[in-house]
Length: 130
Image (cartoon, rainbow, N blue to C red):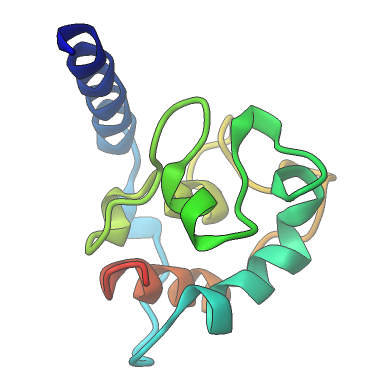
């Protein structure tokens, strides 16, 4: 139990340290749309831009984004969604391409999300990632 707690703490601390190095002022604002849900609003965005590498067929970095449960679970670096706080969610940092090393999709691997799409992802997370 103590080992599991330590591992969880390291993952959370690592994600927090990464988040601290990101300039969140460069994030597009969250969409003002109320009632954003994964199945209705977010999954279609991910299906178009992310499933090729993070879907049911392939899961790079042990990350899948084809279901709510898988998206919230995160990947090899642990959870990447901080419910209620999109600015601290590494998923948002990645799709907003705030850091070159973590930019999703990587250069040449697909069309980046638009500012409107990132805003919708932010709204979904800020509203509790339902």
